[in-house]
Image 1 (tube, protein in one colour):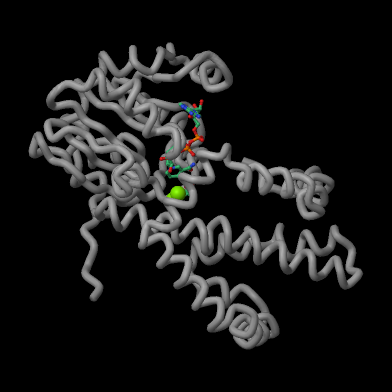
Image 2 (cartoon, rainbow, N blue to C red):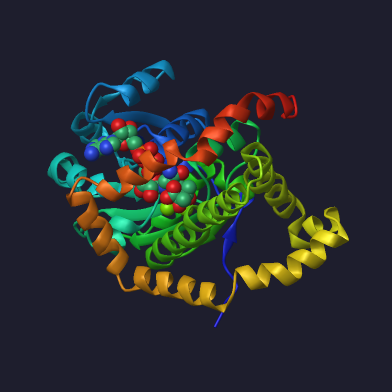
Length: 335
Ligand SMILES: NC(=O)C1=CN([C@@H]2O[C@H](COP(=O)(O)OP(=O)(O)OC[C@H]3O[C@@H](n4cnc5c(N)ncnc54)[C@H](O)[C@@H]3O)[C@@H](O)[C@H]2O)C=CC1
Ligand SMILES: CC(=O)[C@](C)(O)C(=O)O
Ligand SMILES: [Mg+2]
Ligand SMILES: [Mg+2]
């Protein structure tokens, strides 16, 4: 089933194809800020397009951009990059982009949701491609300024010019992505794997696992501070070891007691039932049912999302974390 992925690095890619073009970054949030700054620092011609004055507008101005109204940025642009929230992209496209589309323009996405689930259906005479960073926006910026880059996925949905992949790779390079590597994929594969990943592990899985362990320890009468360091704070160190040296590197760094307990108890806690549920979540993404549900939730003003944010803000783990912030900050390696 599996095939070897095509991976591009800096030496395979030139910025030339995108150098003279006017790039409009729509949105200045998590990814928008990182993209606008990295692309500008890579010598590309970037304007920021926003709906209205406000926090993003002020931030972009503070970073040395002259933000424009979305449609003004789009009218002048050769390349339009969608970095507003997934659920906002359809309306921004319909009202601020579609009316000003010209033959040969490029529509660029950081996640395939709107194209894959057909919320946006561009005309045939534009290029549609994706550069999807495999990391949060602030990290995309941080790695770039320190000479590195977050790996990216690249994909082409529509290749009117015949050069869409070259342009996707050029943007990937401007972002710093090809300093690590750009993996070729499809909109379908990126969209589905990204959603499955964030739900089952990166955001959903990790958060619930940490909360379950933390709350259990506290229920059993252990001090919240001790529980916090054990079940939340230390996870970063374990994950950093896996990130740097793989599972074997992590295992070599922990005690034999931890290895034995980990091998035996891990499989007991995360069991066949958990795998079955990961599969169930993945199938729900693949069938489009999750997308349908999320669009419906958004249509009702995202009450579940908002409640999740409020509950987490008030949670004991979050309050304990805030109480320990000073200690954690003091302990961080300097420089
Ligand atoms: N957050 C991340 O690290 C990652 C995000 N992506 C993708 O990047 C894209 C942007 O996501 P984020 O950076 O998380 O977005 P965000 O939520 O940080 O975007 C906020 C920006 O969009 C503007 N905005 C908010 N609501 C709007 C609306 N209704 N209409 C117009 N503009 C609006 C805000 O003013 C702000 O400038 C999405 O496609 C997302 O899936 C991909 C990889 C990682
Ligand atoms: C940061 C990232 O890659 C996510 C989790 O997929 C997202 O923010 O959508
Ligand atoms: Mg992702
Ligand atoms: Mg995502």
